[in-house]
Image (cartoon, rainbow, N blue to C red; front, side):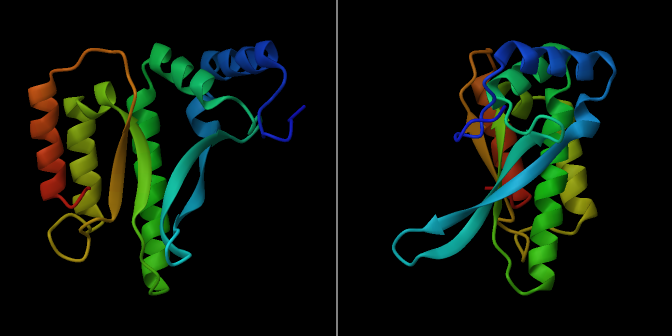
Length: 169
């Protein structure tokens, strides 16, 4: 049962559910994103949104367990690209209504340093026409999460500069 915090009280049950979804290759299809507004406290205006990963069948599961399972299963980069797709979908829907605002996603350093993710991210931004110094600049914000996995920091900075050239902040 979910508590007032939105977190499940049945940690063992949640972990079993995540394991069952992984075993049946159903974790990614059950992953979806909810968007919370980012508010400028000085103006009380919405200045952007943040994508939060949730599971359809257990929405109150602790995100740490969810992402640990995806990391262990090697599908963290695929989940990150799913977040990118959801974020760009929201941004494009808002832009149609003349309400464009940047959308943030969370990403670990290790996944962000993955050359396959870098290529897929660039391809997706170009495919949607938001990659450039033009109107797409600042559409997507990548917030780097804490991560104990080692990465080549110099390469990560180079990769981040390449993403900045595509309009990612």
